[in-house]
Length: 243
Image (cartoon, rainbow, N blue to C red; front, side):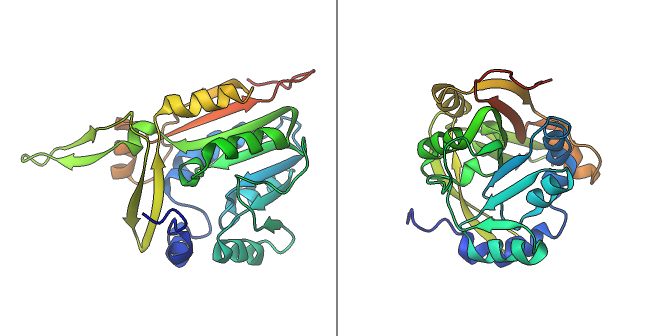
């Protein structure tokens, strides 16, 4: 496996077509609501969106009154974000080496990007570094149960989910809708241990249920946890409300 090529450059066109202007099922019907609920009314002003892609969540943050910056190493996605949001700020940078001073942001967001990052230890350290005291790291990620398995079908036509090799961290290729990208499976404990070791404190956790959308997809999302949402606070005086 060529660790320098994660597939995003060649998949950008397919991704833009698949994600559209408003996002896919998991974003629109599972994650957007819980993610924005952790943002709205909290007093955040500055935000950093890690792996901002075509800029959809940055635009949502601005609509909520924040001043977001998006970082995105895939040129075609970054250019699409800038074209859709001419007043926005979208920079060519990676999570593993953020071009910002310490304590620069009230809020750092990783919206379905942890699975794309090779040097995750460096990335979490950088996200923590650029957070201000009392700031929040807001994460939506593919659940590790989901990345360790897949749906299969019995002879009678019933679907069931199979999970295997859960404790083995590995990078695997996934293909759909003209997109072929490399994602990481890591045990959930790996992420938790890494975030705890960074000095962050867990303030919120959820495995959100789908709200609306196609019945077939909704049924599957209710049968096994595809995603989770976590919020981690960087300790400091006068902590903001977390619930």
